[in-house]
Length: 515
Image (cartoon, rainbow, N blue to C red; front, top):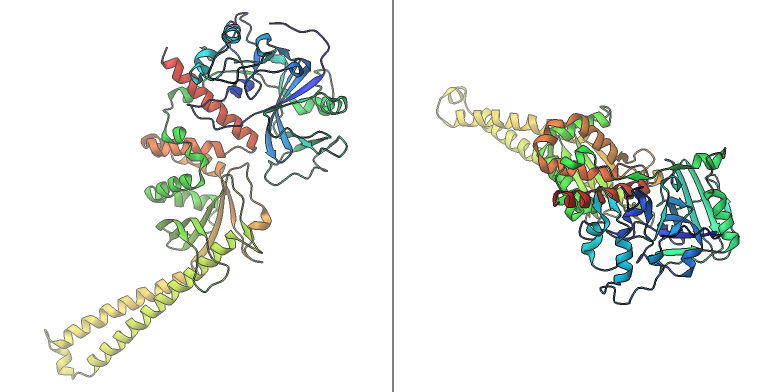
């Protein structure tokens, strides 16, 4: 390994979170956010892997800074980490064979000679089963030279390909609504073309490098904005106790938490299994604004189309019928609210439930009319009898009298149900990860009504405090609860980091058990 003291100024952008993090397909770039335990020098450097195959050409020798980025939209990336004073690993400067299944033994031997370990497990064991490449690490820095933006800070790089390069702050930045919100957003626009077909991009143009260095130059003695933007964040693998005790579930294996439909299925199942728990949560979350009563039913993907009625249609994620309300829940894990023409899917669902409410009222009204007709007919028959016949036991009079009592009770219950139905509220709820806040404008139904916002963190934290026994006694419910954690982070980059960390930890835990 060479420290390479020659003058270097270039910057390399290294794409993160590019694939599915499954225990059977662990991306090599997972190491980029963590410090190694130790290596053959026993000093635990912070190693970095350059996507997509770890190797680099001559341009890779000219860079002093690596920016770890995630793609957020066309021609835009967000910086999630920064490594300064890069030293490249000699064996990563190579050309790999086209047949990636054939291992370059010289490169592999040099890489494994570094004796890098994470959580006490060698890097060869962590990635060796992948069998597709021989480069495990590309660069290294001292742990003190690895940074992440402080919580709430965001750095966006936009490739304009034509306009001048400059920096704007959050007041000027016009971020796409799919991006995370931030307290301190900085956007650097570069007169560069975005390398959309590559997972890394070298920035060597002096003007572009200077603009990036303006925000990336971190100095502990520097005062003001730059010092406050970054924090030194090189972490070693340290499995928390609760993670060591946790069992891998189907949610982890199949990544069910990423699929809106499957996660909605789980939500529906547990709402029906523990109805009182969920009603208690809803009452507390809405601060007794609504009186729900008991849950009558929970339906999934109910068809919201009403024949002959405009502005209806689609399928409702969850429709909960309670004694006193209809609760429409639209689950938005990664998608946005759909707008067709001038109407949103939320309005269509609301219109459907209003029609449903009216139809149920009409049905009860028709039922009441039939009961009233039967009651009037029987009352007339009974009143037509003589006093002696009415007092006679065991005859028609006694039967008709009993019918009248039964019909009176049915009428009373039906009238009560009609009144309850009239007052039954239609409550719209958009359930969303904290990093995917819905647009307030799209929540509006009309000038008076709108959908309520419900972030996953509110459910997660409430269950933590109020469902301890249920979580302890029901392994499936605990797995559902654990899977929900991914949706509780304020920023998408934070959520992706935690997801990646969890899969990495699971792999290390698995290999540690096999020792």
